[in-house]
Image (tube, rainbow, N blue to C red; front, side, top):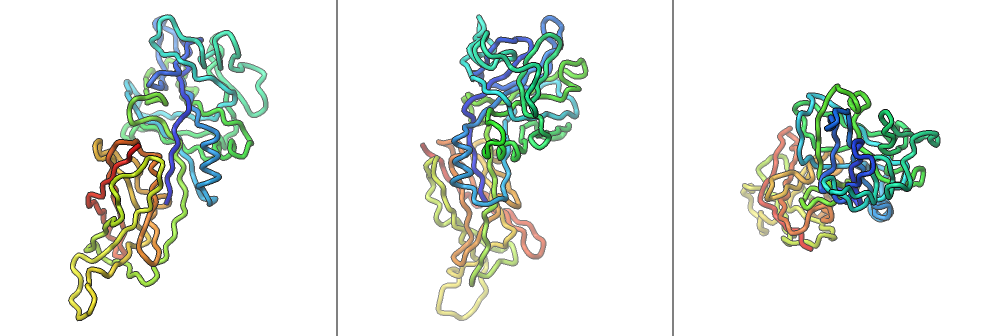
Length: 365
């Protein structure tokens, strides 16, 4: 029932056509294959790194179970001439690199950080292009050596396939790579994204996909999203609802939360039409419980985008003898924005009901 995000400490795009160009301050990461002004086949590969200390903090202080997953997420900014079907690849980087302060459009070029040829300042350390250490490789085209180095173990490789009808946002499962870096099996130098070798440096397809970077001024920076299941379902004397004729309410919603806080939302459930009985207590005061197959989701109130989607493992609503509940880590939400919580339950009769009762809150700095 937990979703926790951290954001990159640096990112850049490596362009084969501009071997020494640094793009560390660009708001866009480009994952493309293109034909240059000199009619050569070229590619671009994004590199993204997340803080080692932040990753360690999540494992040390938050995740208390062996059941978890980690996803690398990036939001599409623009795309053109994309094929019907394609696959992207993600690998943990095998060498340290410097973000730099360059941009794609700088004239003259800024060369003080990672580029296609160099891991650092132009003229200094180059990406390894031969005699790789065990379990590490890289790739290049023709005489244009460079383009990053990465760990080759299949367990660390992540892929995402896209079809004509699928969204083009990136959501790559990188659990094994992140776990290996946390346990010091590999170094945490971040991730590199690339197309398949059948598309890179060929005439097979020319297309561009651009994603928001770590330095974007939008609400869509890349993120490393940790998901784990620590839900508990103990109803005590609470009666579980058996129909959609009920009203769940977030009675402890304060409306505003600091961006580094964790809020436990309590869900009070009552019948819409309580049965007529002779009693000395108010019938509406008798709480019930949502079924164990109940989940929460968060939507951005302005854009209508789903920020945290329903998940049968990681957004499952818990229950104790007092009421249903779930925890939200506010750090994964952009501050100074309004959000809406949606609840979904699968009733015992097979009916699925979504409760959208304007459970709204704001994250503040």
